[in-house]
Image 1: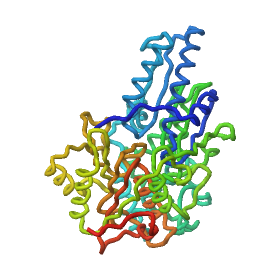
Image 2: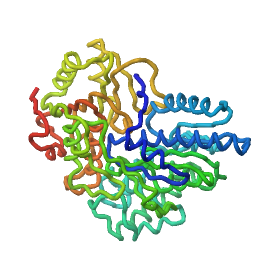
Image 3: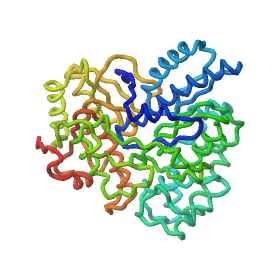
Image 4: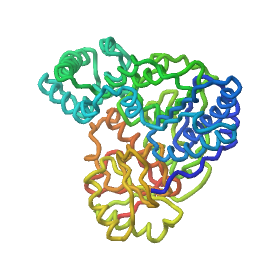
Length: 475
């Protein structure tokens, strides 16, 4: 798959980067505002400064930098600019130790005694807690319940789970209502037996891994970049913060309007006191056209945002473009329309295309066959550890797996409420999460967006799309 292009600082980013000092920096901004680019530029600047200091002080250990990211294209880019910075500073490869990884891979590397096959994945955890809830007579939507359990385990330290009963449920919606009585029942009838199950079978989940990393001897990281921090749990952030050297450079990049996992935290509870001078808010949208920004923003209108969330804004977008297209008709007709558009309008030698879906897997079977039949090469990005080799310009991926990525043209076909498990209330947390997920997918696009659904199976979130913000085509 064609890799990420070279990052160039905007005047706004350059001004902020030149003022960067050691310490914690929170980088906020809507999709397309250049948050990740800003963090990469900070990494480059900090590396240059620390290499000069290393030479002056005759430090004999390498500069340690870690980048936590879901964006697999960044690894090759970072390797290239690190080499440039080292050469410019008159150093050698031995002077730096830079790792680009996910938090889960980092934790397993730091904790070699953990057998990865012994870690309970999120799907198996969800199945277990749903069975326990059914046995206890807890009447909550299974998807919501699984998220609630993941949320409370990830937010509170193991010895403070009881705090969940009275805590403000930061990061969770208002519906369905989870009162103190129900919270106690979840703790006693779901969490307690789940903890006992893990103990009796000597198994761990990913939250246990984060808690173990909190107890490990800190690594003393000189430069840390944590991308998409809104989808870190509180315990994961506690583990990451503990790894920092003193002094160090650290940037936490986030937009809670794009939160797509059951997470929630406050900076204070993870051990950080954030002052205004430690916060960078990027305003301009350099990725999306005004039309795409408006189309995405309406899906988020009315959702509750905290200070770390930013809505896409047409006034901050720098370019005009085509109205997004909504296809209404059979899935096969949606795919035919998409392929016809690619053939007529897309230059695959210079442009990229992303076909995104909430589920992926078998949901892409028909599309795979259609692309192969049209002689179009494609790469699959879902849950791959490394960026696929090759020069394909078309990607197939779940929406979750394209966080931090961008394409010239985005297609989200076959949308339906079957893709999302949520209630019908506007404040239902799973519905809000579906809205954030689709909005995030839309904002991956630089030039055009096309979504599609069956006329007799229209997803609820389509009701939020206002006339005049898209072109409707019945196929």
